[in-house]
Amino acid sequence: MSARRVLAAAAATALAATLGVGATASAAPGATPGGPWVQDSQNVSLSSLHSYDELTESLQKIQHTSGGRLDLSSIGTTNEGRDIWFAQVGTGDRKVLFVTQQHGNEPLPTEAALQVLQRLAGTNASWVRDILDEITLGVVVRANPDGTERYQRQNVDPDCAGAFCATGRGFDMNRYHDPAMAVADNPVPESAALQQLVRSWQPDITVDYHHQGSYVSEDGRLITSSVLWPTNPDVDPAVVDGSKRLAVMFDETVSAYGHGEVSLYPGGDIAGIARNSFGLQGSDSLLVEFRGGIGQKSSGYLIKQAYLSMMAFAAGAADGSLDALDPSLADAIPEQGPRVTGE
Ligand SMILES: [Zn+2]
Image 1: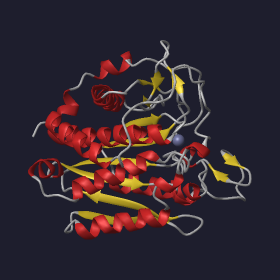
Image 2 (image 1 turned 180 degrees about the vertical axis):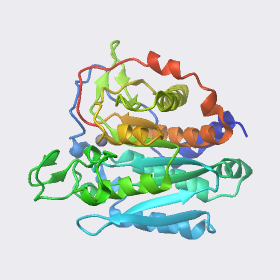
Image 3 (image 1 turned 135 degrees about the horizontal axis):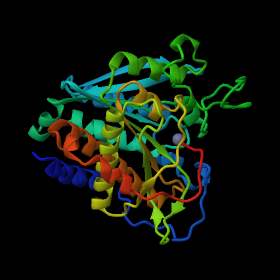
């Protein structure tokens, strides 16, 4: 099945799986930017999201019903003793890694990842076999479970000190991925676990999923998502090109579906950011930031966009359509408004 057909099938699944939430974008044009990052937890119905225990239960259930197709393991434990779950499906040589929720208050891509794992591990349909013969998909589902339980950006480490520590709360784990830092020296257990995984698993493609504040484009349309490839100057240009192909695939996927308004994310160059770190280690790498201001009405279509993009990356990596994309098209993705420091 072509990637396009796979996408059509994926879209149908996503529609059925979005809890009956309509696909209508409700935020008014002209909404003011809500950065620097997602803050309005009061707008999210947390009860509609998976708690840590529910997430664990769901992953174990998918594993149990998958007939051995899904492999679930813990890649480390947090300061509060929670497991950091890593789910794998597929037997192909090309390794695709998705990471969700390094920031605890950026929840929706985790919901999408569960749907993707359910879809790919839950059926033996030929179009799924075609994908999973070619790739192995690994998903770090909720990289920061402690922070999620508090709906905060940081991990939970109230005694933290030093760079990227929010005193009394914890570290921003997405600044502690520098490949030059030894895993044993990493003060952030969640980051150390991810560091170790990337070194041993060696993904060919990584996509790191987040939320950002809300922005509008120059003509007043709501930005639904932003992307960026590795910008650290030491990343191999061939890796940058591969990463830009991921950006093009994301843009084409969500734009084709509707309610997709994609812009560039104004991210930094430091090696400690996952997007740059993965690129420095030779993996094509993309950051995806969905809009914040997550109300009930927008949650459905944002989960759907995340789901569709994950399925597109998996299918495109499997059938090679990803490699046929022109990376220079990524340079036409428009910039967004004021600089933020979310990521
Ligand atoms: Zn983030």
